[in-house]
Amino acid sequence: MKKVYTRPKTLKEAHFHYCPGCGHGIINRILMEVVDEMDLREKAICVAPAGCGMLLYNYFDIDTLESAHGRGAAVATGIKRVRPDNLVFSYQGDGDLAAIGTAEGFHAANRGEPISVIFVNNGVYGMTGGQMAPTTLTDQVTTTTPLGRDPILAGHPVRICEVFAMLDGTVYLERVTVNNPAAVIKAKKAIKKAFQCQLDGKGFSLVEVLSPCPTNWKMGPVEACRWIDEVMTKQFPLGVVKEVS
Amino acid sequence: MSGNAALGEAAVLSGCTCYFGYPITPQNELTEYMAKRMGELGRVFIQSESEIAAINMVLGASVAGARAMTSSSSPGMSLKQEGISYLAADELPAVVVDMVRGGPGMGNISPAQSDYLQATRGGGHGDYKTIVLVPGSVQELTEVVPLAFDLADQYRNPVIVLGDGMLGQMMEPVSFENIKPPKEYPKDYILTGAKGRPARMVRSLLFDTKEEEEHNWKLVRKYQRMEQNEVRYETFMADDAEMIVVAYGIGARIVKGAIKRLRQENMKVGMMRPITAWPFPAAPLQELAKTVHDFFVFEMSAGQMIEDVRLALAGKGRIHFYGRPGGVIPTPVELYRIIGRHYYMAARRKQQ
Image (cartoon, rainbow over all chains, first blue to last red; front, top):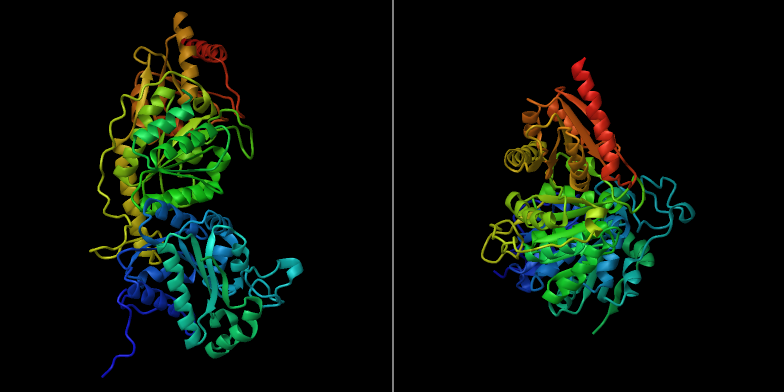
């Protein structure tokens, strides 16, 4: 019989702690598929974040450091400067990269550090219980915007890819999602491309992944996937935002 | 050579291959020196976007196996505390230099000793300690810096070099002959890519309270080893002294001048100068307290090290204090007058 699906070698045999319908599990899996397919297990160093993604070191069978909230890009910079031949990537949420760690992410991008950032955008602070994130949509209800995000009081959703695209140090920025099988395949391709950019020494690469958070969005998993298409992608259009050949 | 530049060269000779820093007075000469020297040597130098980024780059370089250093001054040190706490929790070596200036807040750019408590109590969140070295001259910087790198590697813990604006900026002749080539330490924890070995993880998050408590006790046992083995201090004219001045760094340098004058007038004053502010030389002080009743604490702060002196003496003897906070540097003559006055008062009290 032909085997059509198997666990990636570098994904440990552990149960994900993620909520049902969460995008992290898919992103974790395709990351390790890419590591396998590009034969990077012995080269990869991952910088894990604070937030729901922080426990990924329980799943990734690669060298991993857990960084302080928001500091992933600075820590990855330090690692990469010492070990330029390794593949160094950080895995960061929207609060991590677009709020508390904006400076670190922005300046690593501006310096063109040849690192890759996997930026998981689910529009909320997941682990702390669904507070407003910098990427929360206008009028979106969260525990700290109970009447919906009012731009006059709470600002506007931040488009990280578009902001980073202005910086000369960035070479590859793409926004993807994982809400359907075709999208997952595209997301995987984007991660592969980002890693290749790094291996080629081109500069800073980032893949933004719109990821469902049914628990904090107060939706069912199917509804959450639909919401990404119908609402979230209006603010965060999918596709390559910048590619320098 | 300025203290800042000498510190930089000492770090280079100690095998520091990565330096990350953000400009702040009065330590800019160090950052500038490293920019030039690290460039010449093909080592890593980054002027980071903030002190927070700098300490996290240090953490990254350290977990990748390099000897890494950052430097700052008081307001910048407050920002680095988060990273220092993580370094301690992750058990990663690093050297952090603080050229202290007047505070709190923006304060000023004059030399001060008002970060003593921040440095010796951990400084950031959580139960942790860092070894704190407090050199008193430019030449001593060349002894303390290689020691800092070795202790950091030996204990896998951040080490603080606590100077002040004056030490950083004053010019003195200096020799680097004492610095030996860097020693090799086992690096079985660093991240290199899991080539031919199981994957490693370096983390400070331990959700299980039992695990976290065990990790904390493990750190405590390490700090206890430091307290047992790493106390460093110097005494000056202490043998026959009837009053012992406790002072460190540049403060001790000024006190030395004052003691020389006091001795000319037959006032039996000596000094105990900590070289490690943490672990604090409590036992040597207790030993002195067997024969000396009066201790005089001088600090360029409103009184911080005095807490350690009180703890060490535990009610024994009398503690006198003189402090000049806010970036003020007293002259040896000023200290000679103040210490002399207290010495006479103490002598009169004894006669009564």
